Length: 71
Image 1: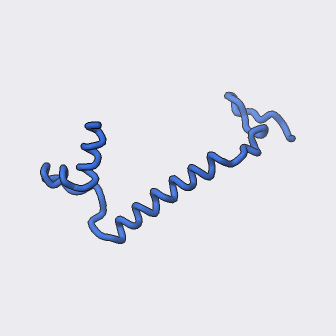
Image 2 (image 1 turned 120 degrees about the vertical axis):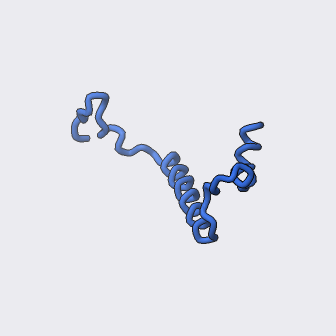
Image 3 (image 1 turned 90 degrees about the vertical axis):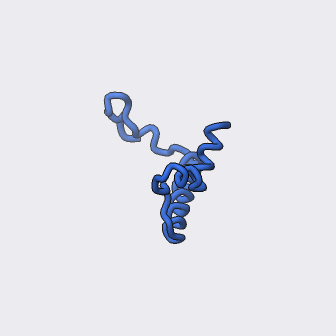
């Protein structure tokens, strides 16, 4: 619970203003939209990659890095 409150205070900039440190976010709308787009892109890519079948698993090497051969 306390980590959540601290995170929200940091995200809103209240804790940064009280501690007189720079905000850890871009101060303009374009920068904020860039951060949002990068975050959404990362989350969507992770979601799509996790829900796809691993079709090349037999071609991957083991702990030694040697492949198992051609399928």
